[in-house]
Image (cartoon, rainbow, N blue to C red; front, side, top):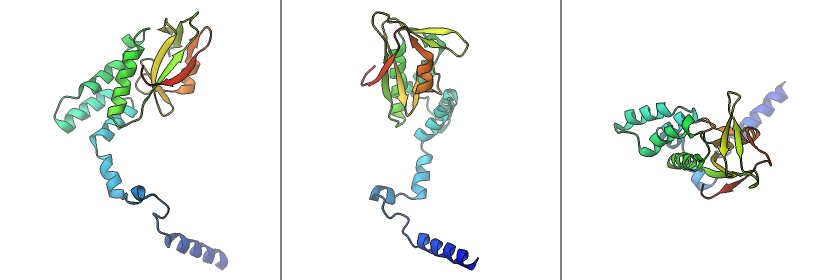
Length: 184
């Protein structure tokens, strides 16, 4: 029992005696809890917190309350990107630009992802949550935005969808391939 207690004390002394920032790059070592938490108060992070919950309306209200100004156009446009009216073939590129711009303005690193199918059978459909299918494209090309492991477009709504789930709901006669692209 005493030996276990002594070993625990020695480990505690060894850990406590080691500089907490040893081995970290100078940029990380210079961070303090205060500086990290100060960043958490930024308008950008507050907006992202609302958007990560899918609450675009809340983000708009919070922006006005915090700044006393109307929300910027890119934030207002984000709200319209996810409307059902955009769940039709031909709207994906504008929707992707809108979502990409908003995520970029919030300091994220969004990517455009192109989904393609055989040009002989250029139709793709997406399984909606209500058991119906929506036409995604008639030209064999669809684009969405990827952020982390989530895909965002008019079909996913503001919460996004895991890439694997998205691919399981996107269908084409000859299958679908996807790749990262620079522009929609």
